[in-house]
Amino acid sequence: MALQSLQQLDQYKVTPFAPGYPVAARSFYSPVDNVHGALTDLLQSATKSLVIAMFGYDDDQLNQVIRAQLESVNVYVQMSLDQSQAGGVHERNILASLSKWENSKVGNSIAIGKSEKGAIMHLKLVIVDGLDVITGSTNWSTSGESQQDNQLTVIRDPLVAAEARARLDIIHDNMLKQMAATRQVTPPASQTATPTPASSPG
Image 1: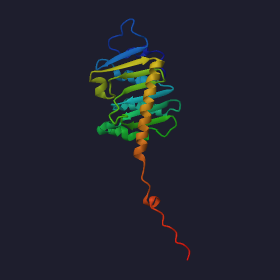
Image 2: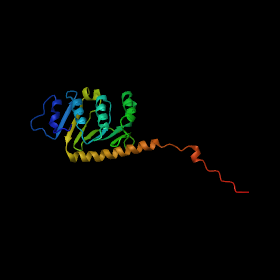
Image 3: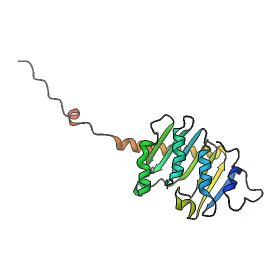
Image 4: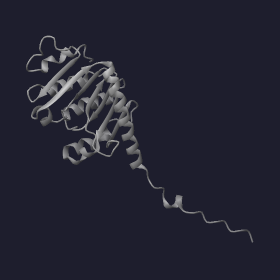
């Protein structure tokens, strides 16, 4: 269900926001604030689109929320994940489930790759319904959300969201092209061999 205001997230803040705090922004800090709860509500709030670029995708519960959105016929889901995460055992298992993420359904697009310069894609950025931008240092993992010193900020502004979306679309397109290039298969020898000239009639 869409969030009517970001103030609905105030329940996840240990120390209440100060009077006069901007209504269009909310910041949370792990390990003191309930960053996981705020993220869960935000991801579940998408009713039209959920665009994600995430380094450190290692949270089973958040993954389940996203998979539910992938199964929805009303929500467009775009995910850009960093290829190097496959080096971790848990991350590798999550990435290996790509075929189970309904990627073939209309309205779902998942890409795993590197940056345009061949380095890691280190963003932790989500856009919900073209309105709420979630950013900060928080990796989606138990340690990242509840043990490490991390920050999560939500900005409700369509112009900020539009700028972020333009950049994430370019990153996603580049990753899709990387994936397409690695899937190219060399044609069988029977298709590439030089045809034998037909003998002339005697």
